[in-house]
Image (cartoon, rainbow, N blue to C red; front, side, top):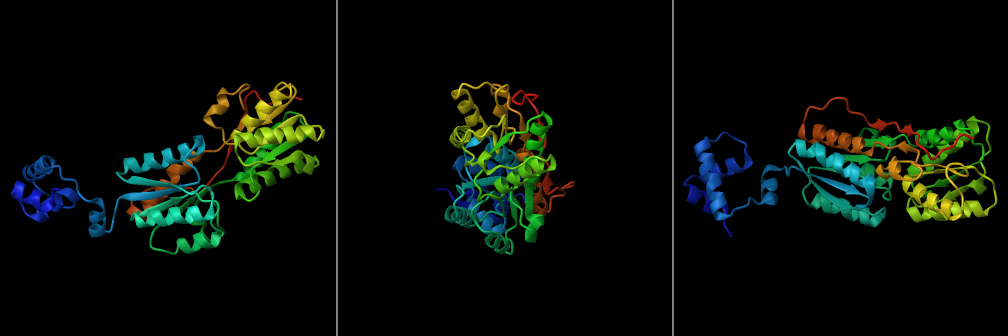
Length: 332
C-alpha cells in the first residue's frame, strides 16, 4: 500500500509539500501540485481521512441521526441536509435510532467516534436531560423536530399544535361537526401537540371532544386502517376523520373503502405532512404541509455557521405548517 512518503519520492518533493497539496491549506505552484497529484494517481494513493482529521482537528463531516431510513418524510429531511452540506463541500454520515433510547444513544456515540465535526439529531426516545448534557460538550449539536426550552437555540422544530389546530379547523370550516381523530403515539411530543391543536379547534367552535372518537395510532399505515375500523365499530357517528399523518390517512382511506363508504361524500379525510403521495391518492388527500426539507436545510445552515464560521443569514428555529386543501374534504 502506497504511503505519503512514496508520493513525495515519486514526485520529487518534500513530505510537507505533499501535505499542503492534499490539505489545500497553503499555496503551491500549479506545476508542483500537478506533480504530486500525478504521483498520487500513479501509486493509487488515497489520503487517510481519519489521520487527516486527527492532524487538522476537522473532518469536514457532520453526523446525522434519524429515527428511520424509510419513507418520504426522512428522505426529504436528509436530502435537505445533504444538499446544503454538498454546496459547502462537507459530507454527512447517517445513522438510525429507530425511536429506541438505547439505539439512539448508540447512534450518537458512533457518530462522535467517527470524529464528526457536528451532529444533527432527529431523536425521540432519549430524554431532554440527556440532550441538554450533550449540548454542553465540545461538538455542536442541532436538534430537528424537537423543542427543549433550555436549549431552544439548538432546536429546529415545527409548531405541531398549530398544525393540529388548522387541520381540524379546515374540516369544521367545511361544515363538519362530528369529527374523529387518529393520533400518533401519545409518548411522542409531536403527537401530543397535534392532538392538543385538534382539541383547541373543537373547543373554539363549541364542539365537544369525545374520547370515543379518538384512536391512538403509531404513524404507520396499518394503524390508520385499524383506527378507522375501531372508530367505525363504536357506532359513534362522525362524518370526517382527521389523521395525525398522511401514512395513517392512507391506511384509513383504504379501510373506508373496505366498509363500502365513498370519499368524500360519506367520509371526509384530512392528513398531516403533505407527503408527495397525497396528491396521487384517490381522492387527492387534503393535508397540513410539514416543511421538513426546509427544516433540514435550516439545520445544516445552523451547523455551517456554528461549526465552520460560514456566514448565514435569516436563520429561523421554528416553522409554521400550512393547510393544503384537495379533494378528500366535502362541504357538509
